Image (cartoon, rainbow, N blue to C red):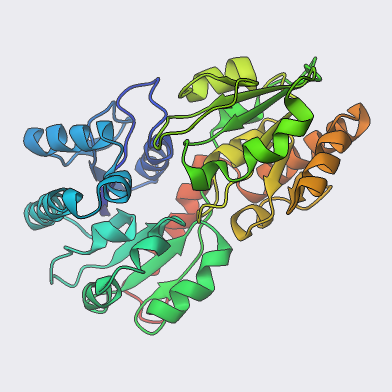
Length: 370
């Protein structure tokens, strides 16, 4: 089975945080028996068994795109002035699809990458994250995608169930909608969390207004002038005034989080109001046994069972109550054990995720998906 996977995100090296989940997913699929995987993506160290499908010129341009923050960031920050970047992306993908003739299945990450699919009738599996739904709001995009998807067997795979109704409404008559959860690297399950620093809390997020949400406003009464510490990690993608009581560290690598911060923090805080699928950082925190306090939104509510595997909050009062609850050692230990076990049973490893995709690959060519 020859799989062509395409992605606009990929880590440049072992310390790069960007697109790490793509590397793990590609590695898992390449380990499937009888599978040959070629990957069109920004340059980086490829896992064993994964072949590069990107030309040097395409790789250089995709690398520059990553440095600039990615296609979504460019369009959000520059509006119409980013117009050439989407055009070049579509042209690069079209060229890749045209020359990769020995392909049985297209595995596409992000809906935008399906726009230049050729009229060759080959089936497509599309991994969809929450940010993809913003693309569907642009004029004409849904119509263009429908033209490409209806010409082939298409399976749209959101990484969270809350996106299913929206995708069924847009594409349910021409494509199957099958939610597929990503996996979690085994290293997170092996983290030992003792002893815990009782006053250290962390937040890991891209710094934009929507990703931060009300974090600073809700946390200030609890953290400013107190012994509690809030350590913030992530790239600054929008100008953000960081309060002096917040310890800002910039972007962190998965290795830094796994070895230095996740093992002894009291909890992870994410108050995002950004439409997203199922945040990978939250899955990794749960696998490590790090309790989470999160905004009560669909992407988080599909992960966290309130007061069992974490805490959901919709107001400053609920946020304060969640902080106080997790400052109880007994509560923190109980939630830590339950969220780790739930992550293992529900999501498992990247090989488990690859097996979920393999079951979909096996149905392609069967009109009833059996």
